[in-house]
Image 1 (spheres, helix red, strand yellow):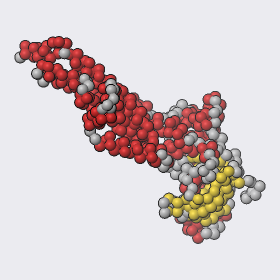
Image 2 (cartoon, helix red, strand yellow):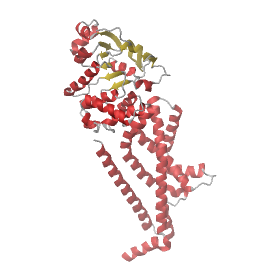
Image 3 (cartoon, chains in turn blue, red):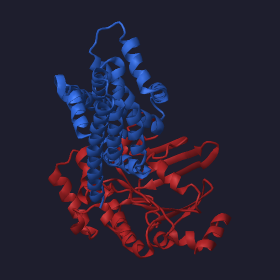
Image 4 (cartoon, chains in turn blue, yellow):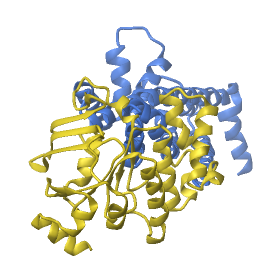
Length: 230
Length: 248
């Protein structure tokens, strides 16, 4: 039994330095997640801002409409399909780095979800705060930045980190455009060694550990924010 | 009591406000004079809060003019943010900024909008804090204070901008009864210093004691105004008599 396990381990991870598929894959996964979250942050923030301005003042009708279309399409279709459309259709005839394509796809996808997170954060701030800011003579924009956003961010940060966790797992479909992320790395080992159990369980464990670490961080931050409330 | 030498600081002409089909204000015309305390009373839903909120356009008037400092502030070309700096407002729910210390609450507007230095803004804020007896709370956060204390801070926050007029929207309605007095006391002091004040209130005692004029609003109509003595002792309008018989 033990001998068998050892043999399998050596076959899957040690021989021909196959462990590198996992470590390199992990780096790709982390890179994708990190930059996609950043891109999503920018997109999400901008969209939430536009939609709030529209809700509060009735301005920016066309932009608001476009944001609505974007949100509907992105949230109404699977991320794998979006990834493939961007890679094979939009950049089909252009030579472009695969990871850039993936970051674009995952970032655009995450942006839609982050937009809703920001928007609900902003809406969780009582209406009286905007009125108090405006009554002092602050413009709509100044009140947003100085008074509403800092309060909205507090409720937003934990949810945002949960979005990072989701995204980390979602990038596992990057293999569809032949990008060698963690999942694809495990799958390559499987295809070389014809043994599925060990590489795939290893991949799962690595994801799990990363998610647990992130969840830990969420908890700590949540506690910090609560402490600051009073 | 009536002093004709006073010049109007705010002239309201035919102010109308509709929410959809619902007419909340039916053409209100009134002058608010410099140094005057005007109390606005009326049953709930009468439009008195809307009237007050139209004065600084927190509620956008549907029609009519509001002349403040010689300018029609309903004109789309007038810079309402600039006018609001001179119109302090105090809300029923205080609306202090919970993520800032008291001192930051008081200084953020003067420092950002009037480009005051920190020393100057904090110095003036401290002076006012002392006068309302809350100087020792400067570094606390709003939620650490009682309702009455928060409302006094809210008054000070508006005063830190050195406004020409103060608008009060039922400032004591959200307070526990034992805290009403301390807030009214601050408002009385302001009145004695000849601050121009428009006060929407249910505090008849305050209106009688402090106001120069009392206005009665019902169903969006401005039905009667008078000096407090006459307003309460010889009301002419039927609806006002009815209202007073219920609240007094």
